[in-house]
Amino acid sequence: MNISEIIIKYLLGTATEEDQQQLTSWRNESKENEEMFARLTDPQYLQSEYRKRTAVNHARAAEQMKQRIGKERPLWLRPAFYRTAAAVALIAVCSGIVGYLYNNVEPQQEQIAQTVEELKAGRSIAVLTLANGKDVELDESTDLQTIKSIAKAEVDGDATRKGNGQKSSKLTLSVPRGGEFKIELEDGTEVWLNAQSRLIYPETFSETERRVEVEGEAYFKVAKNESKPFFVEADNQVVRVVGTEFNIHSYKENKTVQTTLVTGKIAMQQKNGGDREMILTPGHQAVFDKSARSIKVKSVDTEVVTSWKDGMFVFEDQNLAEIMSTLSRWYDFDYTFTDEKAASTVFMGRIPRYSDFSDVMQIIEMSGGLKLTLNKRKLTISSTK
Image (cartoon, rainbow, N blue to C red):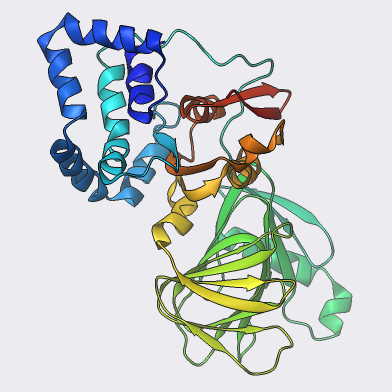
């Protein structure tokens, strides 16, 4: 184990007696090492570094990160019980500290044992299903014009549909586990689809409205058109939009649908529930309970909710069962917990979305008290305490 891991364990309060001895030896090796350690325990220094790091343009950094896939180091994840003000600042700058240490000490020798090929992060991939049931595979090189040409060719080749005077067909864009996809609709609206998600939309919108359906998770940047409102249907919920940006999280296995508004204004109502609408303002999330058919609104950090679109996983007071549900869709693996303690452990932190899964496993294990074992795309998580 190298010194960077020992320092992280020291900060988390999980260092063993042997770790403490190694840390002491390292501190005594040089004046520079002792000065570094002193900075790590100085609350004023940590808070200053925290302010610097929170001023970073994460979207730009994420884009740069995508272009260096395989070279970027993982960031951090920590148990949520580690909550003092100094600790928050300390852990927030932890990635910078670890980066420094990785460049100044020998690289880690121990690797997580795996019996299968490394799990890689997801990629831009989708399947477009046409009205006649034909599937067309898409990737990052497929643009809107290509998709429109595919759909038009299908319509022109269908004599029955042409004879009935139908001018537009419904298309289904499906993103599998281990994938993501961005599409621009014919009105200029941009939609980012997360892993295991589906968008149903017409090739051409009607003259009075723009209406789509979504399953899974999608981020919408709706083109403004006050005379033609934009509707999104998601599991018995309808969102009415004029022009704005928002995120919908609506996976079938979840008990709720979460709609988060980033900019603009949206109106929400239950499908087939009359004309009663609820207005949502920026920085708020509407949580629709599927069974109770009720909606509650709360304030949220929109960066946390939409981080997946910008190349990061940001977890805020989520238990490991919820985190694994998210990660398994992106890395395409199955998982099991050997005990409830492991599943219910609550974490906070952020991880680069394009990291290899071995890095993610290390981050989780280094947080303390957990053991992850991967075998043929099946992950087993257990407590070690």
